[in-house]
Length: 322
Image 1 (cartoon, rainbow, N blue to C red):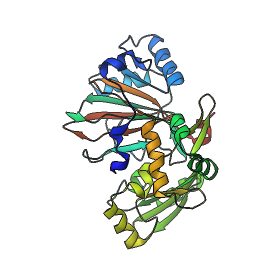
Image 2: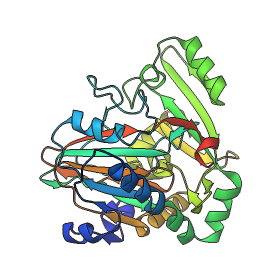
Image 3: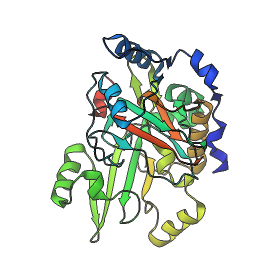
Image 4: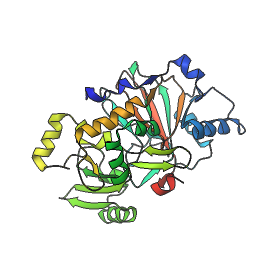
C-alpha cells in the first residue's frame, strides 16, 4: 500500500491558500439567489468548491444543501443513514487507521449522483482530510497502453455480499425479498447469482471513461476500492485460496472479463495521486463536488471526527453525461 499512499497527492492547499483559491466560498447570506448562483457556478467551472459555512448541526448542513434546489437522494445502500434526517448519511464506516482510496461515488453501479456534498462538524486531531482528484487530468497522465484498454473495454464490477463483510445485500438493495432484488437487478442490467443460503454475487459492466459535454473525457470508476491489488496480501491470499479468483467481497475486471494487471491498477491510482488536491478542514465547512469530474477519498485520522454526506439524485449513468 505504500506504493499508493494518499499522502502523496500533488497539491496541498494551506488554509491561507485555500481562501485565495477560486473554489473557495466565504460565508454569505443564504437568502435570495447569490449563494446558489455562486455555488452552482463554481461547480460548473471548477468541479468543486468549499463553503466555509461555519455550520454547527446536521440540520444546518441539510438546509444549506437543499437551498441549492437540486434533486437529492433519500436512500443509498453503501452508506449508513443518519436516521433522523432523511437523505443525510454518515460517512463510510472504515477503520480510522486506514485511508479510503480515491473513487467516484456509485460509479460501480448503474445509477450515480452528479453531485456529492460533505459537511465537517468536528475535525480530527490529526489527518482526516478529504483529498480530491481531477478525473480529466488523471486520465491524461496515464500511459497510452493503459488508457486505451480502459476506454475500449470498460469495466466489470463483481460484488460478493458475504454476511459479516461489507454491507449486506439487504441493506444495499433496501429489501429482504430475494424476488425484489432479482427484479431490481434485471431492471438495472445487473447480473445476479445467489450463493448458498445467505450470499449474493452481482456483476455489472460499465464504462471506465465517460465524456462530459464541457470537460471532455474523464476517468469515472472505483478501481482502487475493488481491485484485489489494494488488499492486504494475506487477506487476498485467504480469499483466493479458499474460493478462487473473484471471491473477494469486491473485484473489478475489464469489461471483457480479462483481469486488470496489478501494476496497471497501481498506475491508475498513481495518476489519481498526481492529479490530486488536498486541503485542511475547518469546523462547519461544506464541500461540494461534481462527482463526475472529481474522485474523492479520506485520509487516515486520529481523534474524533464528525462528517456527514448528502448525495444528488441517483441517475442512470447515461443521463450523467448529458
